[in-house]
Amino acid sequence: MNLLVIGSGGREHAVIKKLLENKDVTKIYALPGNGGIARDAECVNVSATDIPGIVKFATENQIDYAVVTPDDPLVLGCVDALNEAGIPCFGPAKNAAIIEGSKVFSKNLMKKYGIPTAGYEVFDDAEKALKYLETAPIPTVVKADGLALGKGALVCMTREEALDAVRTIMVDKKFGASGDEIVVEEFLTGPEVSVLSFTDGKVVKPMVSSMDHKRAGDGDTGLNTGGMGTIAPNPYYTEEVAAECMEKIFLPTIDAMNKEGRTFKGCLYFGLMLTPDGPKVIEYNCRFGDPETQVVLPLLKSDLLTIMQACTNGTLSETEVEFSQGSACCVVMASKGYPVSYEKGYEITISDEVAKNVYVAGAALKDGKLVTSGGRVLGVTATADNLAEAIEKAYKLTEKIHFGNQYMRSDIGQRALKA
Image (cartoon, rainbow, N blue to C red; front, side):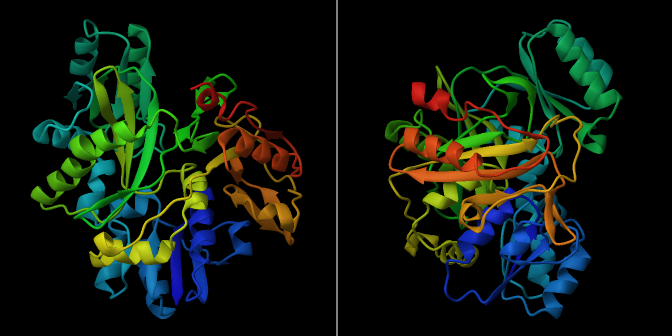
């Protein structure tokens, strides 16, 4: 089988490595991929948002199955376009990807169908939002309606921060048209849990839970990033919590989308907060999380391609989705200065042996050498029987990787160990 994976990050590298375990896979193309992914797939310089270019490539190269991983192409309708060209895909159609593409849509969906989430107000006028925030409860969360590279949700601990957030999103247009509307949301407290799930629009088969580390600095300090590391499973996500989430959140969400005529097939990501009042949805994503995928897929024992095709074909109820009982830890090696400004172009030295455990996010090939090209450069993942061992193994692996200007957190997983 010829496969096509759309995207260019560590998440895509993790998906590609897992798909290669299937004996029927003869070739994988990555559009556009990156310098590290080039070790495992043929990278083609077509942008993940160039939908006509993707369809043209897929038809000319007789692609048997495509995996659309990033949010942008999903929201733009990449799956619909490929399906129209006769190419089956993993990922939701455009009308279902709106569950991530619009915060206003997802909040209204939860309200309509009684799915537990934070209280909220929606604004399309900056003046009205600012007036509301003069007396609204603080702390609060201000979210851009549309996609914003995972940085569109601003947690505001003071009234001044909340007012600044509205100006940043709606007046200064930091996230462009994504900030034409905003959601002002109740501030929730409790442990956060990420649960990625496979669904064919009828049944939901959750993957192992995970815990992301968003802040740039140790002790959860500094700016929010796309994720500095993650562990799985999340110790706060007990069997009792999982059962409650299935009954009150996961199945009701799939049911709600069906009732709205927006059947969701693919990977639906539930960002949850375990509040004193029970689990609540913070956000939905219409795809695999990054870097959660880098700890979840290494624990998957079943065949990924078989599961993906079952999601597409509506046969997930008959398909095995099994995870190992162990733990995984991913430490992100980044460029110093991320997520603001950073130097790039430093050569990365990494042995073939260590590379088996590495998912490349921000690196390019220059004169045959792998060099840094992004803020998050590598995700280094280790699995073990228990979490403490997985964390230790992951950090030992980072000692064998070198590049200029490198930076990483030294406390990934410590919060989970204390739990």
